[in-house]
Length: 462
Image 1 (cartoon, rainbow, N blue to C red):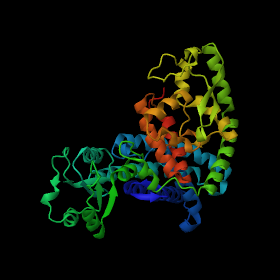
Image 2: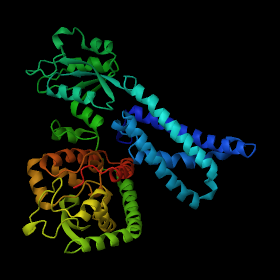
Image 3: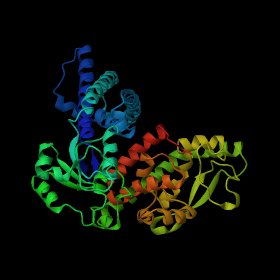
Image 4: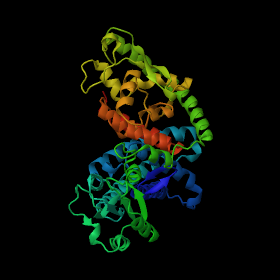
């Protein structure tokens, strides 16, 4: 994987992204040359058209990231890939129309733009067809030797078999665990030299997945492996990199303390984040005002009660604040004010409420909280005090998610479907801790772009 700031991106995704960008540049140039030939125009050198070509390729690349065209499940599904690419191109056309209106100097001819779009769709689909075949093999996957044969090792095996895995297990080594969950593991006693074993398997990384490390850490083995140039990684760190979340079942306080993350030197990033929040929330409130007003009228017409409601949430450093939302449930949804988890097909949700929850219109008034500084656009979703009290007692490290400002969208929201249980909260906490640990403006930008995917393809909205 390639690390961009603090976030890991699979090698296959980086390579495909570069191929796509070159294809888009070529499609724009091909469309322009075709149109020039039709009108018997002698083309000038390509260097003079680079701004126009880039103005075509960059928005379409951003649109593909936003609709999730580079997700692991999309890369292995041709049908999903074609659907996402089609949506991305349509969104790209809309954005290009706006861009060309504001910046006419970077405009391609409308006729050449049509040809460029056709070439782009064909090229991108062909690239997916060829790339999908290569992803099925081991060409883009790192070879890993797992030290351990217990339940942790079995979890790595299950992760390897998942769609889009970026690694392949080259071998398991049983390190004397009392419970063997991986039957094909080779006992350590049968391996004369572990470093030689790792090199012979062609591994570039060793993952330490021993169940009980106390007085059982194979230091000599790990040192010899390390000196051969093979990277040695710890189980929790490996899972964080591969899954984009912090595994609560394996981490401990010392791992969080000594791991790379939670950097304090974020003054410039924090200032830029706040400036973006102010500008974007103010602009979005102005643009969305007609939508909010029409939705409020629809809510009032369908059911009795106010169209808006305030709800107490827990924010930065456990400070409570009130958020403003469009009402999506009946007025008597919570008898006596007692907080209740939302359920799938919850009967308390109105017909209008079901629609606005799916497309996240009910969240738009929260831009006011962002403008005031109580929230940010990106961050862990703020939870209700009653739930926070319960979750802090049942989930380790839950209080640490309040060390960053809550947000309208977040890493958990784009990676995990809507949850309304302790177990769902546990999974979302793993993503929230990853965001708090690895925050960067790049990760914020990625989350904002991929929020578009969640809006276009709602998953489990309740």
